[in-house]
Image 1 (tube, rainbow, N blue to C red):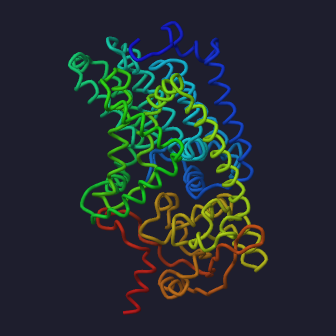
Image 2 (tube, rainbow, N blue to C red; image 1 turned 90 degrees about the vertical axis):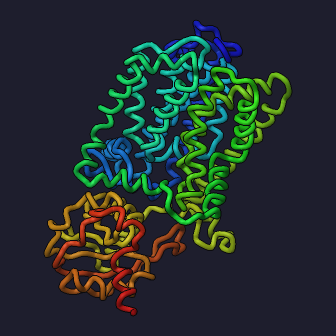
Length: 538
């Protein structure tokens, strides 16, 4: 097999590797199991991140799809919360997904480059902060996306050889995995485009495009993805408009955003992983193309580079957008480390120092999430607050409200001006209280509660104090009566870190305007209470 260094064809199948009949497979399972146990041990110390709480809040209301993402991780969050409650332990199944992605990376790299490369690839993946501690750990759409993209890449791995082509069964299987990846995140479309370009640019493989099987595979993927189309078709195609608009051209040129996001990518992939990963890609690009190298480069680089450079023309972006592209380059990275380990000893030293750096970071971050010691010890560095403040769960809020005699009754609802705060409020009350976001950007909260069902009821408004001076006059047009009820402090170890203002509002007279009725026109507007306040100030 072209590109393989030490794997025999008899040992490249899924089941042979899964049954761990060879020493490399047993070693691979040992690596995956070790990192999985380590992440499980950290669960009690790290609260749910804002996006995790948001996933559980959205998942309480089962829908065909959701505003900002396809539905799969919301559906999974729903099941996780049923089993583990609205707690940090709900991320355990996602940790197991991360273990599955690691094993699929081992199987894929083994098929492309052999046993030793597979071991190096799975070790490198688990030493990455993002792929190990975030996408392979938290309740995020990236976890399901990773495992299904790797499964699709493994199904089509005959394309990484000099002569083989995928069988009809493999095309249908790839369609299944691609459909599930698309149910996780829209990034899956890049995988399909990359496979097409891989085949179209290979004169020996172009005849595949005349076969019906790739298109039948796409049909399978489209059928699995159909709930997203149905939901969007009945909601003004708002999810596509929102996500497409974030990476579209037409915004102000902002190189500073590009540089900051590039630095964030570098930090989250981990410096000890990002540097040799980049070297491996550069080396594969320069040397005569091998089929396995070409396969990895085509699957990973288009997505990785497009999403990395998107901030230059879109004016915005997020560090995780490019990560699926870099993930698909890890088999090539594993081969790079395997070859270097055969000629000198630096990969061994790299592994030892990287493992130490990873452990120090993970333990330090977990302890900070639990106590907030970093922000307290270095306030001059972290002026915007503790770096893991988003992992502070607001579970102390209901007792604090009860102590003030403000605990909402079951026939009331909660209002906030920001979807992030809404996610935290939903978790604090275990989903028992409807949460409404009075904002032009409520994300999925704009679709979870029918505001007409709340007419005539009372609400408790919870927000940051800076918006409190605007809340009373603005809320007056929505409620019969409003009154400022003071503030509440939340924090860790008795240290106040978050301040929430409280406004009691009685008798909702009219619902807040429905969100996203004209996405292109409403994009970028601040919440309507702040708009009214600015108008009043004039």
